[in-house]
Amino acid sequence: MIRFKYKGRSFSSPQSLASALQRDLQSAYEQRVRQAAGASGLSVRKTTGGLEVSGNAANMGRFYNRLGR
Image (cartoon, rainbow, N blue to C red; front, side, top):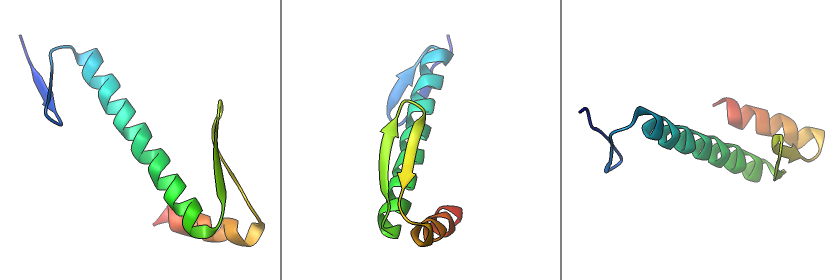
């Protein structure tokens, strides 16, 4: 039996390891978008379709520049 370790947890099933990785990647993505939006003066809402960023056009340009870095 092959065992995987990720962030201190042991996984024996590839499916459970994949779901843990997917959760971590999604969390990191959301955190980065929220930080870039907050620093640009925009608001972020979590919807069924994903994250929705709203604000004025000038701040959207700043947001895209921050997110691209």
